[in-house]
Amino acid sequence: MEVDEKTAKFTTEYKGTTYYFCSPLCKRAFAEDPETFLQKARAQVVDPICKMNVDKQTTKFTSHYHGATYYFCSVLCQRTFDEHPESFLGKTT
Ligand SMILES: [Zn+2]
Image 1 (tube, helix red, strand yellow):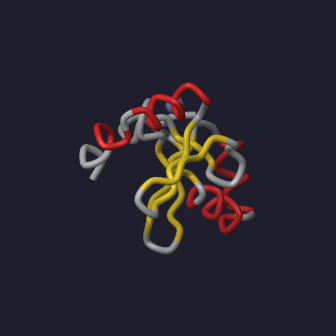
Image 2: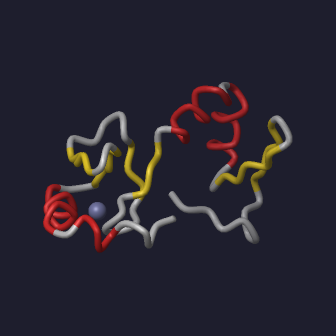
Image 3: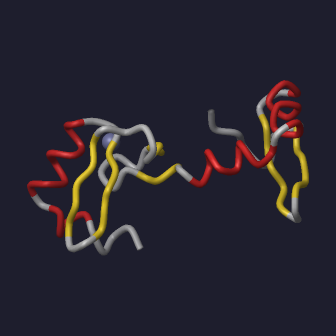
């Protein structure tokens, strides 16, 4: 879930970075095992079509284009990308 940095009451500092949580439960879960959560966060990529976060370890929808791999939330986004990949690239960097 998305947490607003300005209103988040539950924060934790870990290795010089501040993390924001929606509830004390999430905060505690993170504090008990930060590495697992950071690893999960690193697996998150942005779907170039709808800008949603996608877990690249679990998503089934991927495309290869010019040697790079792109990840999608659904077959719809994947198909949209495959039809005109060049129109979605260059905008995301
Ligand atoms: Zn999508």
